[in-house]
Image (cartoon, rainbow, N blue to C red):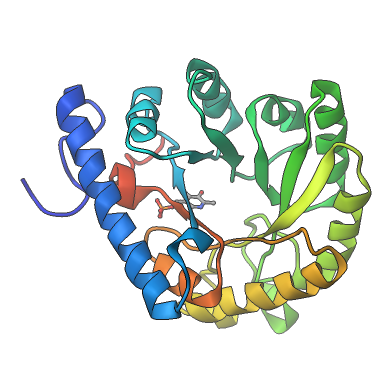
Length: 255
Ligand SMILES: *Cc1c(COP(=O)(O)O)cnc(C)c1O
């Protein structure tokens, strides 16, 4: 069998898949440990969130057996039924996908943390959904670092609030009953001044987080770093890394 994350995959027999996930998880844990040591941080300062999108509930169950507690999804149609099928497990569910306002209700049904809050209308929709469900939703502001200064002209259409608008959005979350401000999130930009420089992008996110924490000391979460750049994220101060491929394998291309 080849090294790395390519193994028998999600349709292998459960024993083989469990062994594969255990090996991948151990490798990610090793990387996180080394990154924390290099940054002079305690390993407990960084939470591993495993992004399980496109992989079956059976994989999530195996991961829970291996000690994973935080999982993330990016499509509510897939995530809702998965969370329901796994309701017996002590999992914390994170939502990391772009979110339409009319899907806020569905997300509020299964989710503890929403990492992709990027506009006031979505804040309003999430707040009324949270109140209807009688649960509190913890919100992270997704910051689009390619929507800053001159880069804004060429920014991608991906989600995220421009850094200049973070304070106003934070105030809206803080004021909304049913929501709490948990922190900030970013995806390293593919264009603009941070293209190919995830470390610089994550350092900028940390700066934005510091500004936010001056007003709201409880907004401590910094969600940054994926399979390819988790070391840079840990070095820059991330409290949560979102890792998919390195744990579960290369996702089949969608549609
Ligand atoms: C899919 C996804 C990840 C995980 O990416 P990998 O490269 O597979 O580790 C992290 N964050 C977001 C927002 C994602 O959509």
